[in-house]
Image (cartoon, rainbow, N blue to C red):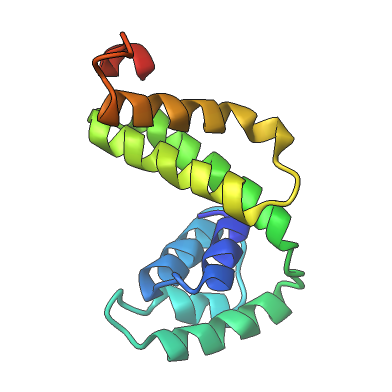
Length: 143
């Protein structure tokens, strides 16, 4: 997991122990190591979030990682969600992920002009879901 995705989840309050542990695994796979990072990787997904967060803060200091801006984190998270769309097979999952991207672009970013396509996609999904008699598009066309 990319550090910016992790910081996005921290800032939104949706972070889990599993996120921290998976991040530590990804760092160790890249041959990045620190004492606290190694400790995080030894936690299970069910361990106490607050304890893992303590070691995460230490690992950030040990690795000299600076917290990025919210805008950067949100845009990287949008990329993360878009990659999940590429791997998804069910239209409901794809539509849910597209809606999540739309929500971030519409409500969390100040200048999202470059993400306007997600507004259009969201509108097409809404028309498909709520007004499909007047909108001649099926789920496969939209995907």
